[in-house]
Image (cartoon, rainbow, N blue to C red):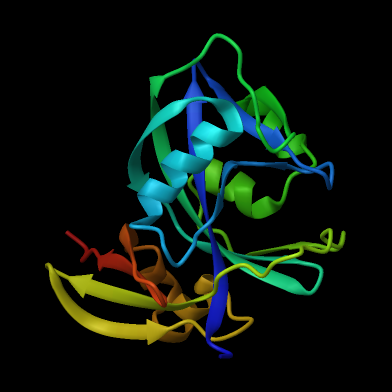
Length: 208
């Protein structure tokens, strides 16, 4: 189905002014996390599991930040990021998938070899789209794919639903339905996953 896309949940974790980042096989830094699966109970549970596997850290998942589209070669993934805090940190961090883990000062992040969408997420900016031209290593399996529905609310009531199209960045969907000034009033609230789709809720905040 053309409206379906793979979804990856990621965690923003800051400790004493430093962010925990992972260097992958493409030699790019990224936030820790992994692909959502149809059998997952929620995006939050998937992120908790992935963070444990990639670092050994037990996390509590806090606020949702703006999702964004990431294109790697011919593949594309919706990144759904959350801010996290730690419930447990082992003395030695270890990534079961073989990535390199580093604590990076906030001031050094802009100069990293790192997709701009991750940088925007860490800085709490609204990401547009990120592209990595380095092809991904061929997998022996296919990632689960989901229909992505954005649900916009005002004063706790739904006033608009939009399904993300193939190759469409969430930022572009926002711009099709709202003025630039209105886009700035959109605040991500929660992501709810189902076996075949994910619903992402936004609150539209009126001017005071």
